[in-house]
Length: 288
Image (spheres, rainbow, N blue to C red):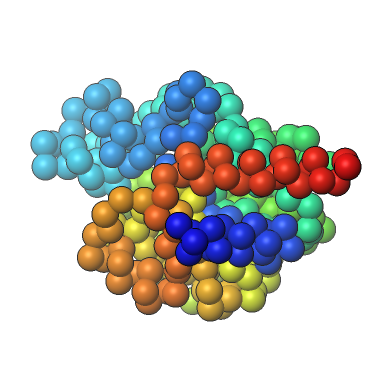
């Protein structure tokens, strides 16, 4: 317990100092008050897709392969429509989303590797921020990212350099333009170039330099999950953290060791409680 307390204190200090890039995964949706109205894992999402479109049995547990089948035999528009239906409901931010949105040491970078809009909603009270989203080559060939102001209007890379906070959505998002990287071909295009960092925006590369990453709601069981995390955190600090409860797979344990990610073995709900409790105590101390 002492080790966990020390790790938690180290994480809080670095977050408040602006030295940490939060990296959010679909597991963050487990914290949504009243339960998430949108799929909160790749497994939940693929089940929603195949419930509406007939897909071969061998593909029904594989999100990217199922999306590719739908794209091939229906149309890309069918994939986008199904994703829009899945993520259309508004998602209320959790206390942990709101805590991250309240960090003040700018410039800030938050990475959100899922399709929901909870983090964007949590940021609505901030004065100035913007989104950078990964986009599908099937819809925007030759372009890797789109830029959006906080009101959803499209911006550009030059404007993004002035934003004090950037929400980076490498897989796209329901808001504001329904961009989704989800099929095999979407990922093939990105992974072909990601090792030389082409799909990752320059300002993201600049903001991650020498910073630690904090992984929340993420798993690293699949090659895709590990590759995206590895490439997004490339050339950052040499020390990171992950709130990762339960038994680790062999690949997850190897990945944590390889990337020097210290594991905080506690439920994300408990981490949220401790973080928001600490924030409340700090506010009382300041008021006093």
